[in-house]
Length: 320
Ligand code: NAP
Image (tube, rainbow, N blue to C red; front, top):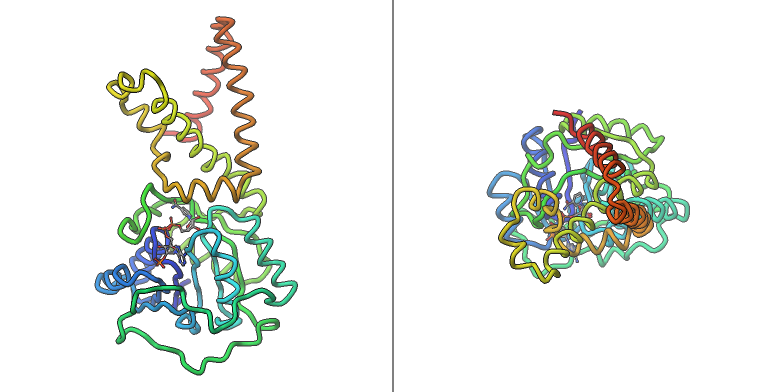
């Protein structure tokens, strides 16, 4: 199962990595990116990753499948605009790290028609970058499909892979090697087709409701990010920081690695997934109190039992 004409909006870390993965597994795919970053687009075209690029979303009108890989707060408006442009048979999906509000906003827009979408004159993906003329169609005279009765299917998704850099320069297909891809449920049969496509791209597909996804990702990703920041911050703010820096090794590096994630991403997931992140912090805070009580009481038996329980649990998460 493959899609011959794929579109990608936002040629950053995730958008670029998806383009590279698709090019690697389905080399004949015609891949068009909508991006403000001219140099990244030129590089991707020169590398053979992209077939073409533009700054105008209307260039994606003939796509079978479009991934929206912009920052979280831009996803809803971008999907709404795409639904005015794409064929009703097409699929538009997002990759955002938080799902509940996005899926709810787009379901609401489904119920209300496309109220609130940007006017079509405003479809440029805002840029100072001039696209390469020989790669571009301007789509003058384009007329939208009826936005209420005919529109592309939106399926929420989230590839569970990333790294501590942003932008196309850090993108790589192998980042997704063996990765899980969370897909929201949908009764439309195209959902199964898209799932089969993701499996062909070698993702391990997990179906989850947007609400369960946000709670689960709070435990699996957003909470651990906050803990990594707290751990790194404890060293930064300590009177023994200089001495501590001389002693840090692989343990400190492993437990704080994700603290290097872009601060925009961290801020965005903490605010957009605040319920789950706050629940995580409350749980951890209660556990810290319990642990502190055990340490103050010099309760070696309870401490050993606690640490052993966690070690068994942790080993089970990543069996060798
Ligand atoms: P990124 O490398 O910064 O890429 C985001 C892209 O969005 C930028 O390259 C840019 O594309 C576009 N963009 C940024 N600001 C924009 C603006 N104001 N107007 C229009 N376009 C704008 O970030 P990323 O890590 O790929 O994240 C993209 C999405 O993936 C986010 O929704 C994030 O939640 C999700 N995600 C991230 C990770 C991760 O670990 N990083 C993992 C899974 C999912 P152009 O320059 O091409 O226009």
